[in-house]
Image 1: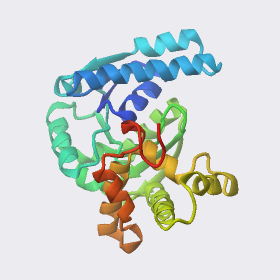
Image 2 (image 1 turned 60 degrees about the vertical axis):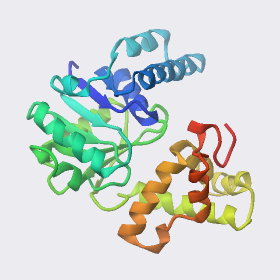
Image 3 (image 1 turned 180 degrees about the vertical axis):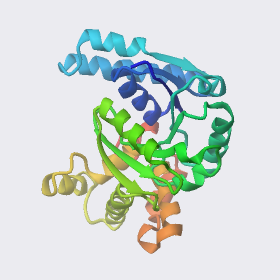
Image 4 (image 1 turned 90 degrees about the vertical axis):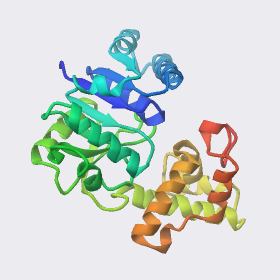
Length: 281
């Protein structure tokens, strides 16, 4: 129960992963270069837990214990030296992730498990940037992590059986439902989800229906808990665009980003984080 978990990146996914790790009993350090982002992340975690208490999903005691287990830091290099498990949740930029994992390889203990929360980038390439690449693994959590239980475990070419076993144990402790996939472009979830999301944007672009009606088609007709356009707003249109560009280059025309998506990103309408995307937030 004493394992130390370091989460690098205090954005939506980073603070969500920190919350579920702390709720599972891990001692968590949430690290980010931006102190203001760290403050916002802690406030978001408190709001999630408060909502859980209001709904009877979380006890007041568990709320307090979860918050007590979370520390913050603007120095991920120093924090990585003590970590048993590191989970990276920075922007979807292969150069940034490789640079980070190179540093982690220098500073982390040789037995530390190194996870990347990438939703589409090649884990094999990320692993190649670090010492002991056999300990690197994809840990693709879903937004919001405290509600969506899926954890997509991505096995890179170098990933060891021990890393798989440790990740499974961590996922079980966090109450995750897990799938294990090989390191291919988009893995399983991003590849399938993006096809639907991009087609929904093309339908909106063509005037097939409103965003609300297109989303309700999937919610009511296919029992999706959330429509693809609202989900894109939560993920971030800029993030969706980067993933689409990567999969378009890797897999072909079905992943070409629609013109509407590019226009909205240029306009700064990135979804919930900016207050407007396909919906107003």
